[in-house]
Length: 279
Ligand code: NAD
Image (cartoon, rainbow, N blue to C red; front, side, top):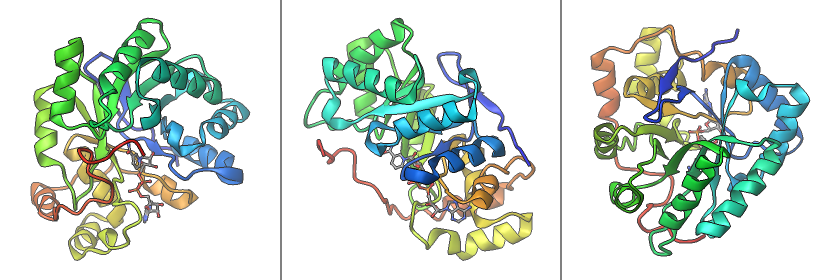
């Protein structure tokens, strides 16, 4: 069954799907099948990055499947070693070429890497690329309020989206409030807690799942949506790919939502963006 997700409007007026498909580690021979399954299941936002080394495979898969370019939201990210004005422009052109497209819907700075102090230069390159029609919407990833504030102070333009690690163990409550106050959408990476087996085995989630007739993964993804976050779950299995987008016939109660909020432990899978350097 195909579920097309409802859209949400970003601060620049662009409408994007509320659920996206994560492609980290989607690589190699199975890529075409995975993308085909995700498209058939109804995903229309595909998240990739220079780092994932799969842009060319995704580009080939979209072409092979004959997916109209206007039918999908394509997002990619500039990697840390390509920050800076010229390097970011070059990285964007390479991403476009590999993805076989002449524009990206969304382009993100992958990490701020504050120590190398080049993310504002990347942002300037992205603003120029946007003026030239190479990118529709500009966002960031793993940015903290001070990094986004600096972008605004120096260029008068805030990102429309920040893609950050977010799941019940690490719910980013403070950052989400800042985003809300500044009209920035929160997109959740690692929405299912990545490869940590523990999250989906939590009693709280199993019990809510039984109550509402969904799986623990669907309960978690529904929690993201009801907290106005855009999850980009990744799976390579047909049944999970379908399960992870079948979220729009259920509503968690306030009580469920609060119980999941309380699962926050501060445990994060990824690095602390303030500490992460160019690696
Ligand atoms: P995720 O939370 O989506 O977890 C993926 C894993 O969860 C799968 O490999 C599978 O083992 C399991 N899973 C998926 N669906 C399931 C289901 N229905 N039931 C049980 N288990 C299930 O983690 P992720 O892939 O790391 O994050 C999603 C996407 O976010 C990535 O693919 C990538 O596109 C993006 N990402 C971005 C950053 C960043 O720094 N911006 C970092 C990591 C990931």
